[in-house]
Amino acid sequence: MVTTPASMTGQLHTQPVPFVLGPFMFDRKVSNVFVRHGSPGSGLIVNAQQGAAVNSVLLAPS
Image (cartoon, rainbow, N blue to C red; front, top):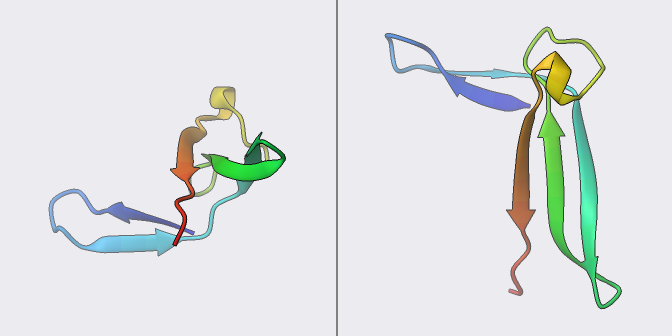
Protein backbone atom coordinates (compact mmCIF):
# COMPACT_ATOMS: atom_id res chain seq x y z
CA MET A 1 0.00 0.00 0.00
CA VAL A 2 1.15 3.52 -0.68
CA THR A 3 -0.39 6.68 0.73
CA THR A 4 -0.21 9.83 -1.37
CA PRO A 5 -1.53 13.33 -0.74
CA ALA A 6 -4.29 14.52 -3.04
CA SER A 7 -3.36 17.69 -4.91
CA MET A 8 -5.55 20.57 -3.71
CA THR A 9 -7.58 19.04 -0.90
CA GLY A 10 -4.92 17.74 1.49
CA GLN A 11 -6.72 14.39 1.76
CA LEU A 12 -4.67 11.18 1.73
CA HIS A 13 -5.41 8.30 -0.62
CA THR A 14 -4.22 4.74 0.07
CA GLN A 15 -3.93 2.29 -2.84
CA PRO A 16 -2.32 -1.13 -3.31
CA VAL A 17 0.89 -1.08 -5.36
CA PRO A 18 3.44 -3.73 -6.37
CA PHE A 19 6.63 -3.73 -4.29
CA VAL A 20 9.98 -5.49 -3.89
CA LEU A 21 11.92 -5.78 -0.62
CA GLY A 22 15.62 -6.63 -0.57
CA PRO A 23 17.55 -7.07 2.68
CA PHE A 24 21.05 -5.68 3.22
CA MET A 25 23.26 -7.96 5.30
CA PHE A 26 26.04 -6.88 7.67
CA ASP A 27 27.92 -9.53 9.64
CA ARG A 28 25.29 -12.09 8.53
CA LYS A 29 22.45 -10.03 10.04
CA VAL A 30 19.83 -7.94 8.29
CA SER A 31 20.79 -4.30 8.86
CA ASN A 32 18.77 -2.41 6.23
CA VAL A 33 16.03 -3.05 3.68
CA PHE A 34 16.00 -1.78 0.09
CA VAL A 35 12.46 -0.98 -1.08
CA ARG A 36 11.15 -0.44 -4.61
CA HIS A 37 7.49 0.26 -5.21
CA GLY A 38 5.45 1.13 -8.25
CA SER A 39 2.69 3.66 -8.59
CA PRO A 40 -1.02 2.81 -8.67
CA GLY A 41 -1.95 1.26 -12.00
CA SER A 42 1.68 0.75 -13.11
CA GLY A 43 1.40 -3.04 -13.44
CA LEU A 44 3.43 -5.80 -11.85
CA ILE A 45 6.86 -4.82 -13.24
CA VAL A 46 8.73 -2.82 -10.58
CA ASN A 47 11.72 -1.00 -12.12
CA ALA A 48 12.91 2.55 -12.78
CA GLN A 49 11.79 2.51 -16.42
CA GLN A 50 8.24 1.80 -15.22
CA GLY A 51 8.42 4.72 -12.76
CA ALA A 52 9.21 2.79 -9.58
CA ALA A 53 10.31 4.75 -6.52
CA VAL A 54 13.36 3.62 -4.53
CA ASN A 55 13.64 3.92 -0.75
CA SER A 56 15.47 2.25 2.10
CA VAL A 57 14.49 1.34 5.64
CA LEU A 58 17.02 1.49 8.47
CA LEU A 59 16.44 -1.19 11.09
CA ALA A 60 17.36 0.09 14.54
CA PRO A 61 17.66 -2.06 17.65
CA SER A 62 14.73 -1.72 20.05
